Image 1 (cartoon, rainbow, N blue to C red):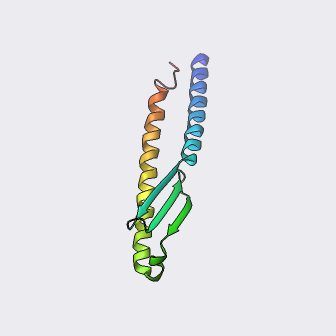
Image 2: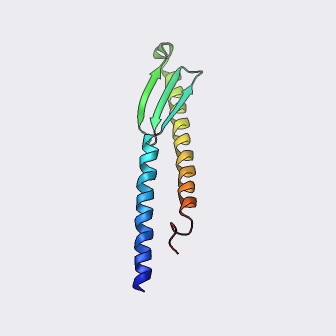
Image 3: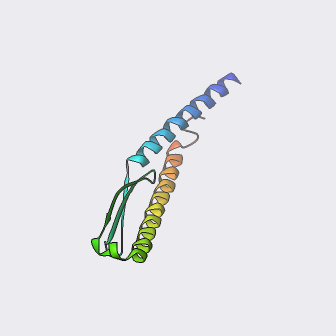
Length: 103
């Protein structure tokens, strides 16, 4: 019984290490999108934080278009991040095999 607890502890430790690595890798990625034919350029990191934003001067006088294009760019970037997180999580789980190699 105690041997099984040790295996469980190793499995959990391996999972925690993989989860931290996964989170760090996501945070270091950059996701860039363009909207309105490049009139809006937006870059987010893997945590969903905006790290760069460029707005074409032509949009500064058209508040409604600016809002629509900015919302579209933010939504597109967030979808990219979510898809990447799902793919990375599936890859992490797949690489763990049978509970990180603990049998």
